[in-house]
Image 1 (cartoon, one colour):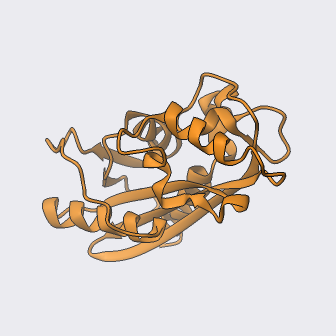
Image 2 (cartoon, helix red, strand yellow):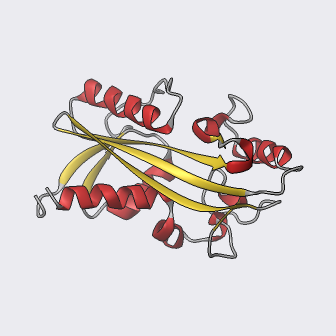
Length: 196
């Protein structure tokens, strides 16, 4: 198995996510994107947890195409806000799913809060030959008062990981991938493959 390149359908049309995942595991697996499969629709994410939404997306794609696939769901969890926005991170400020609106809304909600500790968390679901496995990755940090940086996406401009004095949005893709929540979950998945 170690020398076999496995095809995986990635259950996402998010170009940033595709780029990030391909950058990390593209040399180990052949990633097939949804647009390559001719699928441009949305998957109804009805779950109330990251784990549930990740599973919903993977099962939908597996049933639709019958091929091995991976899906992930990621969220920013802010401790002082009872782990919000969490599973609702992409639409925290409304269904328009606008990154700036989401960040502004989050910063407004934190104005009176002293504790700005937060974490990004990813749950990846792998369906391989019908068998489901899940892998979680977490990176801890803090929410800063204003947006800094132009790289990345989502909440990256206001999230400063522990041990660093720059936000995710100030890092190159390579720098971010070394410590991101998605990378940590992906590493667990890669380890799973290599131990098969």
